[in-house]
Amino acid sequence: MPLRLSFVLISLLLLVTPLHAQKKKTAQMQPLSGLYITVDAGLLIPSDKQANFYNGDNHSPNNLMRVLKSEMYGTQIWNDLVNRQLISPSAIHDYGEFQVAEYADMYYRLTFQLGVGFRYVYNNGWGWLARFDFSEMTAAGQFLLSSNNGTGILGHNNYVVCGIYGRERRVLIDLGIAKRIPLTQSVDLEIDLGFDLNNTKVSKNEIRVPDNKGRTYNILDIWGGQTPYTGIGTYEYINQGAIGIGGFGTVALSYRVPMGAIDFGYTYYYMQTKFRNYNEDDCYAPQHLIFLRFNLNNFSFLGK
Image (cartoon, rainbow, N blue to C red; front, side):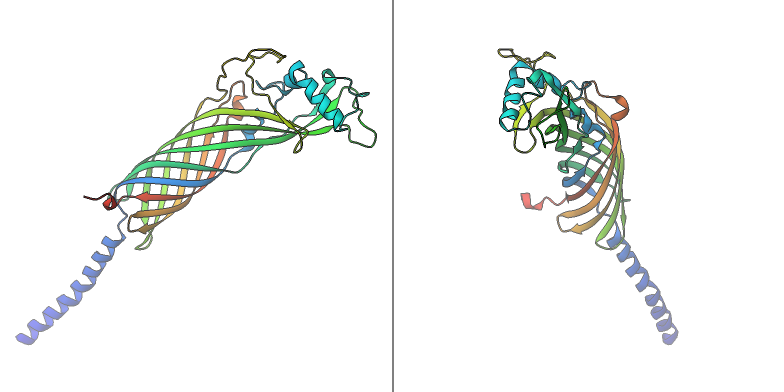
């Protein structure tokens, strides 16, 4: 009898031990839960589709020809180009003969996006998030300046290469749901989906004549649509950006640390970026973000 009892006890022990180990492993594999404060920094790769808002063509509120052919700036630009021997006064008699041979094909430079937010993760790995991000983006390009008759200095090109730039600030509000899936005891896979609300503020649009070595001139419309002249007053600048909407999806690997988790991931935005008098068909475009995010849910450092 004692032998049989010992056999039963040993059998039960052998059965319970792996079950206990599996239960312990499962507990360790559960995604981190609770409330998190998040801080993220990423490399933003914007679409160039909206950048042409800053190219200064006749459809733009910041029309560069209005500045080139103005009394206020045109004479100064003309004199400077003549002194640099980039144009001939016999071919271009004055600033009134300036013509743009080709408008710029603008592009956005790579930029950083910074943000803070909150997220709450439930025991089953599902959660919600709210995030606030900021970026300052610069658009750049080159336009070609020529004369009415297309002639220049002998041995030179018939145009002058000029730079044109724009700058904007974007604030993004992301609201979404999240799912964390444990991969190992220290690494989770996270998938986010959500809604984006963004606000764009145009802060600068300027030209440099000629490019790289020339003076910079503001073409942002602060004259109420008028051609600037000496003594003209300026108007209060009205933001040329607007509020847009969109959506996003995120895939990230999350590494658990004592204070919370560190995520490395990618976010795809398909969002509307709105500008005044800009083609609505060009407002929607993809944006790409590669980011590093810190998730803090252990606040013991604040003290009891």
